[in-house]
Length: 324
Ligand SMILES: NC(=O)C1=CN([C@@H]2O[C@H](COP(=O)(O)OP(=O)(O)OC[C@H]3O[C@@H](n4cnc5c(N)ncnc54)[C@H](OP(=O)(O)O)[C@@H]3O)[C@@H](O)[C@H]2O)C=CC1
Ligand SMILES: CCCCC/C=C\CC(=O)/C=C/C=C/C=C/[C@@H](O)CCCC(=O)O
Image 1 (tube, helix red, strand yellow):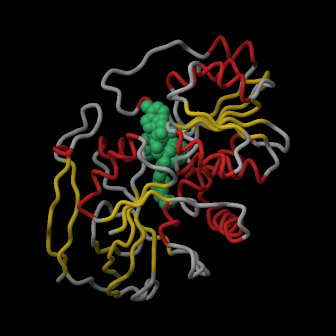
Image 2: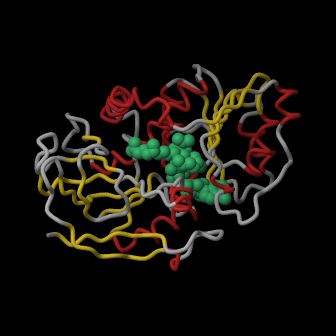
């Protein structure tokens, strides 16, 4: 028997999440039966989409976990997996929802990156750039929430592809980080006197591509800065996730007509058949020093809600994870 801790939602979020929306539970887990494994979380992920998963009451969150005991030969004791079994310290799985960590994962690379650059957020960046935008050498790309888990990888891949990259982020420390990563232009959208002027100054020629993570007001101001035939990958809309009352207009249609823009929403799982090859490609970039990784690590399972709310507030530079 093992004592398992889990976080559950006791009240639907009303606007920004609150401590009182979450409750910590403790339960005894039985020994795994034939075909099952007992997992212990090593790192847990907090991601913006969880704002919606909680709302829908779906217990689907990601973690890297180590097999503690196993009656499933596919996952021997000591093996590492990415699992979707929730904000839980321990869980029993029949293996169906488990993704083994890449076979030749280097020993000097933290397993936490399987939740970040070499995991779902990194894949989101890659597929947004290659499958949705079809980004070409020498094009100019704009990415917002650029110092976050997806955004920083977007900018770095676009640099690998020989593009000009402009990033916006919400603090001067984040802007300094973007410069360190090789972004051509970066600005703090919270302190620039005019977002429109900042976008124009960073790329007077306009933008071929926008990797959209933020939505709302930023999107309204950025669309007119696109070049004719510009392409927009709508990855996220985090500026609207905690709205009690949905934001309304101005609406993008007129700008889209005049500029003849192409806009496509996506979720990364559309290309999951490509994940093994894509993860290997990104691991190779990381080992060659072309892809740098930074994490915002919160320690302790008991701090999961705080880490999640911190992410939604913008506390993180790089990927927000919890070390259990
Ligand atoms: N379509 C898909 O398959 C996926 C989509 N996503 C989306 O990508 C986006 C980035 O996710 P991810 O990289 O994991 O998260 P991040 O690591 O970027 O963290 C979220 C960041 O969003 C920014 N932010 C928060 N509130 C606002 C606001 N009101 N206005 C502008 N920016 C805000 C903050 O940065 P700052 O300080 O710069 O404001 C914060 O650090 C999200 O919209 C997410 O939903 C993520 C994964 C998969
Ligand atoms: C499914 C959430 C719908 C809410 C949409 C809001 C914003 C966009 C966004 O953030 C989407 C994120 C999608 C994430 C999907 C994750 C799953 O495929 C789990 C992936 C886990 C993994 O492979 O590591």
